[in-house]
Amino acid sequence: MMSRYFSVSTVRVALAFLILFALYQSAEGIGARLLHNDVVQDILMISAVVVAWPVGRWLLRYRGYAAYALEWQSRVPILLGGGLVLSLLGKTAAIAVGLKIGAYVHTTGPAPGLTIGGVGLALVATFIASIAEDIITRGLWWRVAPVAAKSGRFIAVSALIYLLNHVFRLAKGPSEWFMLICLGIAYAAALARTGSLWAAVGLHWGWNLANSLVDGLISMDGNPALTPYLSGVANLAIAATVLVVTPIWQPANGDSET
Image (cartoon, rainbow, N blue to C red; front, side, top):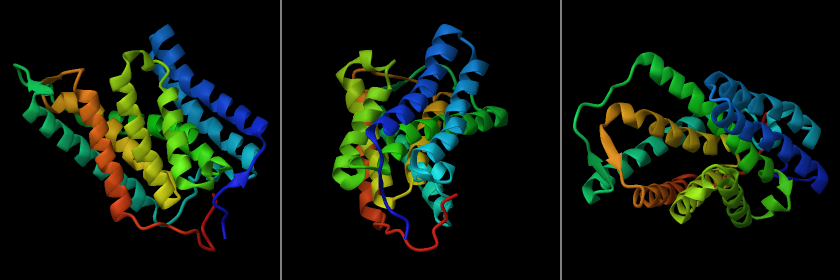
């Protein structure tokens, strides 16, 4: 039977986190903000995912990504696809409510629309960014005791790490913090409930993908004083849905750890 978490030295965990954190943050800090180069940004973001494999082997002596609860299992397509669809529906509901209450308003002129190439690029880019962040803010801590000793504690700690990981957005203030905490709660709850980071990746990917595509589908402006709260509440509803409809998973013999 595969253990849920392992006791790892604090120094080793800190070094693993700092390596992955530096790579992840360099994508925006260096690629986007310093060099204003999308190619460099993409390379650095991909590097954060690639480097996580040897770091995982060094950290827990696992076979690569299993150190972050990303081992392949037969249920992974359901977890990934289900999370993707749930977040897409959640974002759609948030926009619909926002239009009703004035958090979003239609603007003049048609939306620019979407192309097959644009959608394909958005699918890949948002997936890579989502899994990179999920590894350092959730997966890494799920299998490290004592953080993962209790699901409630793990969700709280992971949501806080997720908030602080958005170093370039913290200056936006409390409304942004509220939204990020709520997103962090939803994604951490998905991992805690299912025991697989793929469930969190699906939710995270769906929300990021929706944000990437919505401007091409709807011509509208959002009220920055209201929309973060709307997104936060939507993700709390997503978290509640996950907890209600997803059975608690228990590890069993034969699960792959690739």
